[in-house]
Image (tube, rainbow, N blue to C red; front, side):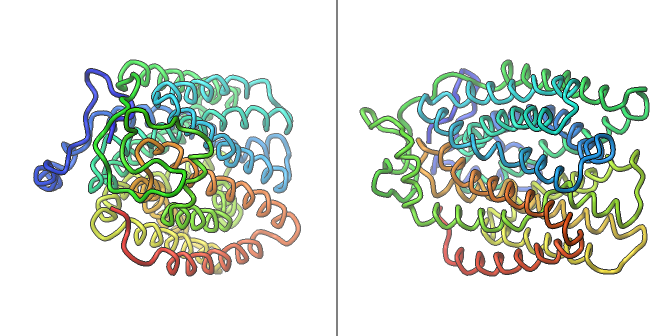
Length: 443
């Protein structure tokens, strides 16, 4: 495998001859030593950036619903834009990174674009303007996600990819944990709370871009690399790094990845499950409605999800390496089903939000990093960013549709009825996914 962006200090992926050392490194006392420096550097960037992003995410539902007076349908459209636009440009970002073999450069563009959007929220006070700013912000996220995940997968050995993604997602979620806390403190201390949140968010996002530029190894990835054991398909270069004189990466070759059975199955599965995955914001709004949580405390609800995501991301990544990434991925959706069930049951009390948020965080810990780790084993190295983007795009666009449909149905039939529909759909899709993803995984 070639390292996606290699500089003088970049960590290289160990070869098969190093597997014995990797197994020893997997012991509890040496787990972090098996994580390449590139992954840790990218994790630091994600931690800082997520503090900025989650500050906005934590206050956005109440800002637009209570502050600007939008209906659930209007918020559903806004949330769909926020979560779906990144899917529309993710393929472009992955293709651009693979074509020029400059994953870091493309990632810098994506992180930078998201950063400059934060101060624009200070002047956007209508649904069209806010939607435009959020669309631009999510465009940046869509551009950066596939190159970043490609760098993580290419810097890691196949047998340790779950751990590598787990460490990155844990650091990323550390930022998600801190973001709502910072937003909560800013809202309490500033006279004009929302504007202060957006200003501080921009400053933190700019710091994340600076860390990426200075500390993540960069440069053009080499055109040769040891071969990986990845199935090839017609129109797709053979597994492994690009050989000298091989044809350039094109959109046609990227789309041809769907001819690889494992890639096709994972794409369809992620898309179907995304169609029945309710947006985080709606989960928090339902908890707020049921328990009467105050507006000032509302930004703290994402902390529960982020805490359990942070605690479980690495352990579930290691478990996925051992028992199978697809099994852990499906298990995460079982946890989400249980969370939906608790929201529908006539239960009250102080324990309910903690249990729901614990299951919600478990869902993300078992899926967010595990899915790209599973997909990386099925995608040739020279098309790694494009392949991860292809699967992520299907999932993101499905969640975009789910947000709009959920908001519309909430307005018409109420929150409990529409959540029941989503729960039934998720159960059916999870059962189909368990059947479709049976059998051995690609190494």
